[in-house]
Amino acid sequence: MNISPKVQLEEFQDRNDVILEDGIIQNVNEDTIFELIRDIKDPEHSYSLEQLCVVRKDLIKFYQLGDDKDISGPIECILIEFEPTIPHCSMAAIIGLTIKVLLDRFINGYYITVSILEGSHVNEKLLNKQLKDKDRIQAASENISLMEIIEECIDKIRNRLENIDKRKVK
Image 1 (cartoon, rainbow, N blue to C red):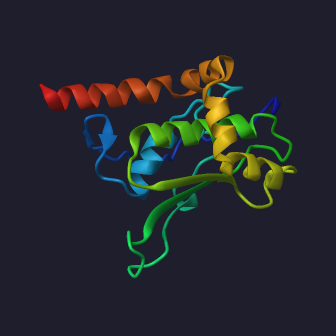
Image 2 (image 1 turned 30 degrees about the vertical axis):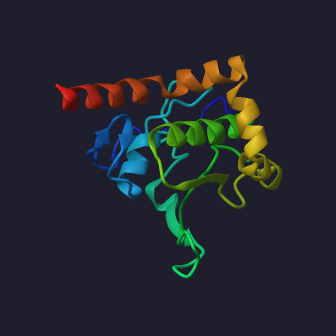
């Protein structure tokens, strides 16, 4: 546990609009991805991942797998990297899983990968392997205790997005 993390309390990135339709984000880009993940609550502290500089817009990348010659066309992909506050952060896997669960919940049509920024954690290779393992992600999402932690971390975001979607319907 990082007992006294460095906290950024000012000079945040500008806020961006998120356009939802039936609970799915329609304007998927670096700005809206960052808008989703910036307010995730750190599992150990009352600060957001943005306040702790764990997530940054420059760590969000869009790319394609395959090409137009493939039968189904290229696969649209998003890579989100994050930087734990300390190299031995015990919550890194939960932070990565929280980002993945949140994005999977509100984004369709993209292959989403979440990983720890190279050189920022002592177990980054092992943790990144776990974060890329579909079976582990599925098993984690079925773990009630783990999902309670994740839901607590994304509660503020989920409520805000649900309110945006409801306003649009009215």
